[in-house]
Amino acid sequence: MTPGRTKGMGPYLLILPAVLLLGIFLVLPYLNIVLMSFRVPGQGTPYGVGFTAGNYVKFFTDSFYILQVVNTLWIGLLTTAICLVVGFPVAWQLARADMKFRGLAYGLVLSPLLVGIVIRSYGWTILLGNNGLINRTLLNIGLIERPLPLMYNALGIVIALVHVFLPFMILPIMAAIQGVDPSLHAAARSLGASKTTAFRRIILPLSLPGIQAGCILVFVLSLSAYVTPSLIGGLRVKTMAVTVVDALIDTFQWPFGSALALCLSVTGAIAVVIFARLTRMKWKAS
Amino acid sequence: MTEVSIEKLTKTFGSARAVDGISVRIANGEFISLLGPSGCGKTTTLKMIAGFEDVSGGAIRFDGQDVVNVPAEKRDIGMVFQNYALFPHMTVEQNLAFGLEMRKVAKPEMRSRISRVLEMVQLTGYAERYPRQLSGGQQQRVALGRALVIEPKILLLDEPLANLDAKLREEMRVFIRDLQRRVGITTVYVTHDQAEAMTMSDRVVVMFGGRIAQIGVPADIYERPENLDVAQFVGQVNLVKGTVREGGSDGRCAVETTFGVIEVHSARMHAPGTAVTLTLRPEAIELGAPGKGAKGTVLSSYYSGSLIDYRIELEGGDIIHTQAFPHNRFADKERVGVYAPADRFWLLGAAA
Ligand SMILES: Nc1ncnc2c1ncn2[C@@H]1O[C@H](COP(=O)(O)OP(=O)(O)OP(=O)(O)O)[C@@H](O)[C@H]1O
Ligand SMILES: [Mg+2]
Image 1 (tube, rainbow over the protein chains, first blue to last red):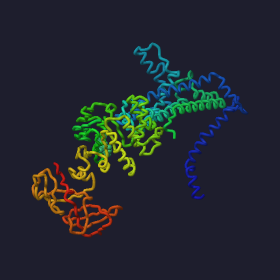
Image 2: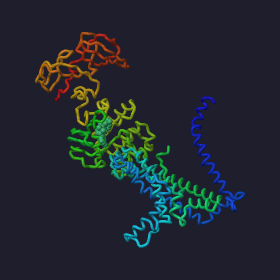
Image 3: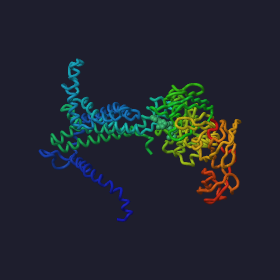
Image 4: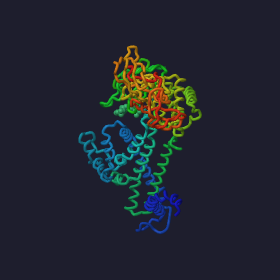
């Protein structure tokens, strides 16, 4: 190899391991899923001989599955929105220079990530169940007469997902706010803006990239969440991810499960693209 | 237009005094510089005037009105930050419009004021650009325009030229000074660059460790420094030891030095025989053949283009620095005559 060529190839050689890893463990399986989704359902075997579009026809013509997509999107949106509303003030406080006990607060924010997702979700079943801590307490102090339906419904799933994914909203927003030069706030004040106006007109728009990142992260994670919805939703409320696993593992329908999985991915991707379009920042584009 | 009066202004952070009882009156339309080394409290003073920093003690008055409890956004000041602090998500025009929107200025007037200011800072045609599409100097002018378009009572600038390269810095110095004269706005300018303070200001406030060391017109600060710190901070200075020969009650004092007997100004009486130190700026010195002035020996010389720097040992042991044009070079160890006019010597602490 000539020195010139080495130099030209260098950067590509550096990313080669990553490309191989992604290629072997992500792209190839994905291609396999695409292929699988067009296979004929098998009788007693995972799949039969030949190809068909029937799995997709089944998906698009059965209102049960369409409704489930809507449900899943709705749970994802709600989780994202609540995470944003709850997380933004926390991120703002954490990002402020004069905050006391920052280390402690930071630890609390990260704490959900330190415990495995299964354990956290079981924890929520203990809290949310009909015989759970919340209902028992409310019953005991006489605020309610019958247990509130907190488990086996979308509400319970959203509550648990918010808890699980909140750090993914807070951290990018915090980083974005920290990245905003404090003198911009001072400049706005000197030009006659109150603290609130300076926040609304300067800090908020400039932390938009973090808000965007946080929303996309939480939304995508919520769509594909399996453990939490399956534990809290039980048999009654199912999200797409739960149904996909049901199809693949419980009922052994590999082709249909693959089609479902792809529909879930594409739906998520479309939602993310629409969201990114809506929140595009003109000043960042070159 | 506004007169600013600062009285015994103090700022403490914990037990540290960042600003320690400074008092200064800034006349209407005056351009005043706060000059001092890093950490001497310049920015803190400016922030207190702007209202970004609470005051620990003392008063700040705009036209006689105490503004200490007035929030920043109500003080009607224009501020230019060291890093410009332009809003990156707004175009030049939107940056300029921000302050006007806060003041609820009507759209047509807003437009005409913005275009007037853009012309003033020579940025007509850049209205639609975002800050990152501008050079450092252009961003600096937008920041200046943004501060001026609201027609504030006072203009505050915190080391606005520190991030520019040397050539642009000199251009902007002249630019800002001219603009300030034309607009006639009371201006407080923070810098640690003595040349900047000297060339731009009507008066300079020299600060050390949170206190004011001297206030005066640039020539006062440079030629008649109150103490050694000031003398050394505002430029190269030579120290000449001397002995008082006659203390004089008439504000004069005769001092015996290697340059002969020099009569200097002094408000204070000095007993004959007292040891004193005189300052002498390098450019006041003339080198020549031995005979005229003090006797000296060249220790070393450094060529620096238009001038040559000499280090010279005087007969009494004082070592002085001076510069001379290259047409008349002196070799190392050569004996020279060192002459300086008597009125260029200055007795430190003369005013005390
Ligand atoms: N928020 C703060 N908390 C504690 N100390 C501070 C704070 N702000 C400034 N100081 C201290 O006050 C002193 C003066 O700071 P200031 O920023 O006014 O200096 P400066 O003259 O502007 O210096 P420079 O030329 O480096 O900008 C410094 O010793 C600094 O460490
Ligand atoms: Mg400073």
